[in-house]
Amino acid sequence: MTRFTDIEARIVALRDRPDDASETVTALLSLGEAVLEEWITVRGETPTDSHREGFRLLALHRQGAKGEPSFNACRETCRELVYHYNLIALEPDHPETPLRLKLAAMVAMHLYLFVSGKMEVSGLGEFCCSSRPLQATS
Image (cartoon, rainbow, N blue to C red; front, side):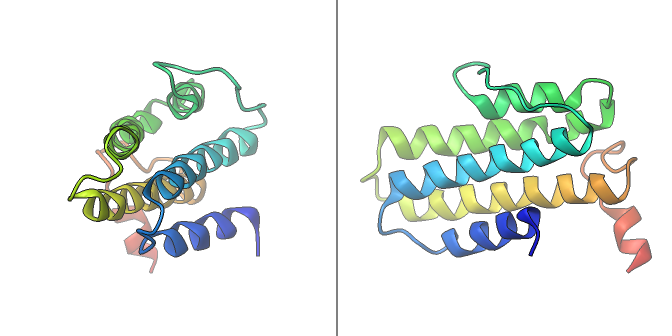
């Protein structure tokens, strides 16, 4: 398995793991970073270690979008993953934490699918997050 496939498998494994909410959402955030690191590395760049608004994920997105306007389509996905991280980190015992974890995992998977799609079809994202070019080849 490639590192990228490992990321997908790890997101799936974390999807239904409510036992330690803080640890799980931290792992999902790290996997989101790993997805963007792959994108940046494939482009021949070195992923940044800096942070934007307190999160490396947002700095990585900013770096990954330079020179690739269609990559901005996943900006809100990155921000949503940070949002779910913040909800869970601030209130890990909230009654909605299991749902929030599932949503965070779905958002992390969405980010993974978008970036893997961009690696296959460079124009993906020019019209929102549409994966129509990928569906047409299936």
